[in-house]
Image (cartoon, rainbow, N blue to C red):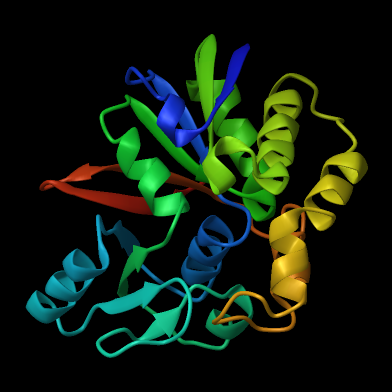
Length: 224
């Protein structure tokens, strides 16, 4: 497999297959939303778009990065979301990096949203559907976030080597700037367990595929 690792700004052309990685915390949160029963996740272009979708569909749940805000039901924290019953709900998600990265490759033939909690399932989809060339979108810190790069590199290696040891990749993520900021309370909308939850390898047995549905970028869980 020919793997490329690019930041969002480096996406000068639409890739055929894209794996969009946001470990801390968008696509860990998305996985938890599905684990809590969500049917689908709609990725919003902006906070205003998220609120507009919520206004048109009052039964949908809207979540965002940072502190809570009027009109939003939840924040982008796996620790806080894991106690919410989302059975059958549609979740609207807007974050600083993860959702932006997925929307940047919305025209790709296959888009996977990934983090450590769905690493194995993501690699399995790539083995069966990924083809020869895969672009990993490293969403955090303009493509320099080591937790996202480590996860992307781990999934890429695991796609071709099923027995890849995750220890070093997880250590890099644990030592990353994002992990430190979450642990020290620099960021808002944080639960004390967030970092640990983001580092749980293969917590969930599904991958997350995003595709356009009636002009919306929608994420759904899939199992190969």
